[in-house]
Length: 221
Image (cartoon, helix red, strand yellow):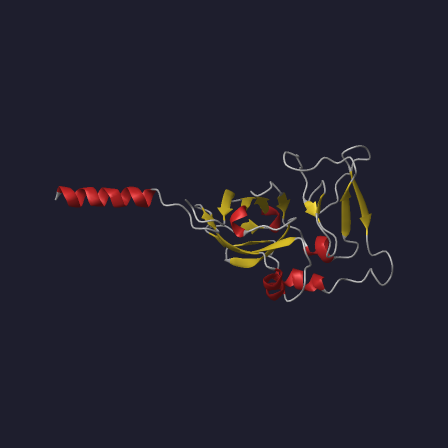
């Protein structure tokens, strides 16, 4: 009898210490499940188009658990690379492949490397390597004209280049929708990340109306 009681208590203690599975997080208001797509071939298959180098795609499934509609937006998600400290917000299709997509280059005096503090999202040009850019998803923000600033130029000034990139429709069709809903939603998020990374190096932070959650993609220790 004593052995059975000890076994039950041990099982309960183990259950209480259970850690979330990779790519999952939730609370009383929301449930998140995600998978990371890193391989260029798999990204191309998921999109049906070639997004180019320098991006990690996340397939995100969001299930509201509230009685009232919950606002879900790609703006709620940020990716962090634990490998080198990169931090980027999800880009909109227009920021990646729209008319006049921005190509942003760090100025010669811009600090870089580990320990550099950056507050804005990373912007990428069409098929180009992403760079840090102050501001938010819907606007370009301000650029400094002195040391530590960035140089930005708009591509697509000619009539030919000003046409929508064919990639744009594919990105819009597959993106996680920005809307209020009570229903489960599933879609893709597009994060610019420099260099080679593995899923275990990455984490996605959700910070929205349902609170703050962190999704790891490595098996919990």
